[in-house]
Length: 59
Image 1 (tube, rainbow, N blue to C red):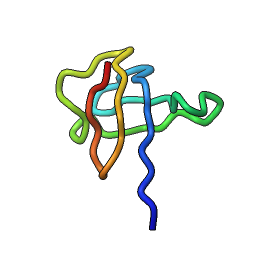
Image 2 (cartoon, rainbow, N blue to C red):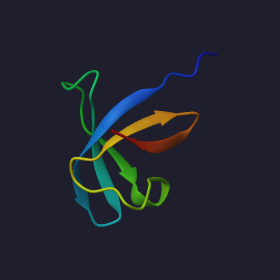
Image 3 (tube, rainbow, N blue to C red):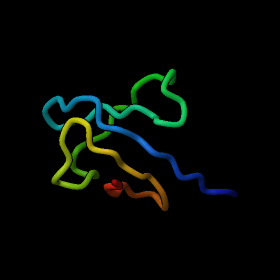
């Protein structure tokens, strides 16, 4: 089984959730993710890398 990494950008924050847009496939539907599993310092426009079942901030 191959684990894939993905890059996202935080499009908006709505309470306890963030809506993420896939940077590699922007036409894809936004992904709703609980803020509890995201880095606490995220804001709208933050770029994230998802790999090894966790999110980290990228430049």
